[in-house]
Image 1 (cartoon, rainbow, N blue to C red):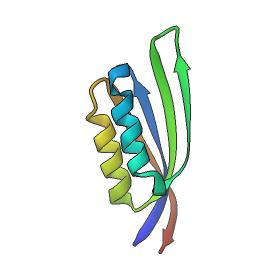
Image 2: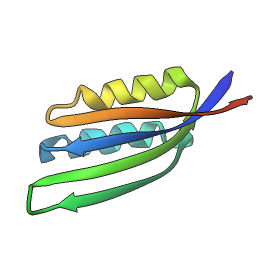
Image 3: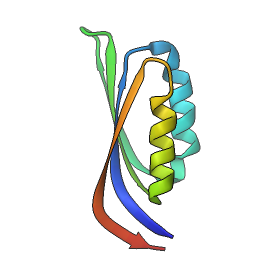
Length: 85
């Protein structure tokens, strides 16, 4: 199956969803290259970037699940780098 490299950008406005978000990211950990989180305390939000290498359907599924969390927004950007596994 073809694997793609992408980034999921996440904005967390509801801190009650952080535990669910971390559980989701953990469950997809085998595909995650790395992640960076920045708390923006003055605005009461957190900004997270997740670099991922996985089949496109897995990336889309993860992005959709994250976006369905209350108070969490997610957008996915995919590169043209495709690896056939």
